[in-house]
Image (cartoon, rainbow, N blue to C red; front, side, top):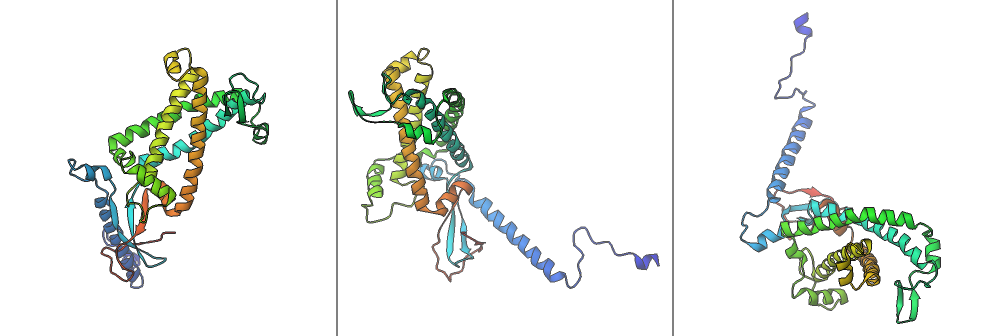
Length: 315
């Protein structure tokens, strides 16, 4: 009785299943093997080029995963590695830091603007000599955003988060040089002409298929230079006595404040244009800054066979 009631112990390597479960188990095993195969394929494609002497190979560092078929449309797409993990982290860290720096800067600027331009230096205005076209910012601006009477708060935030903003910027510059990505970022002789064509839509053809077109190279390099300028002018304002040489090179304390303010305005302008361009480029471009990969049109036709076919959804 004891022997007949006991069930056979399943093997450690081969799972026990009934005849009804066998087709499901075999299907599951095939899925696991396919997943393992795709993982190995992706691992091989993500390796960096071995030929370090080839500058173009080492600088591109954009491995491409095998082509896949979009399950929603049936078309062939390519999955291209665009942004590294470090670049994505520093990009998204910089965004809230820049917002906090601009917000705290507005709290500081209010202390200068509360008397509607009667302060002697009149830094934040548009005009020439004693003539003023308009002053930044008007009274209604501070009232609408509740920015009044918070000078101490603004100074505390600004002086605290500026170090994180500076460290993140230094880390970004060092990474681009160490990784070799500066080759794709720094403008070349053709970048400025291409930037004009891209901006004004003068070219008959689309920009070359690379990580950054000419307009992006000029804009992103300009932002890095603006960040360096903001750091230097900010230090001159923060410690004008200890860093009197730097302050003097910038034209004095008032001139350093002028540079610092208009660099901030340039940041705001870049941010607005950048967001508009991201919206115009669509979800695919935005997703690349989140997951690192960009989905591009494939080279095969809709009904062609795809070796080692993978099925994805672009939505």
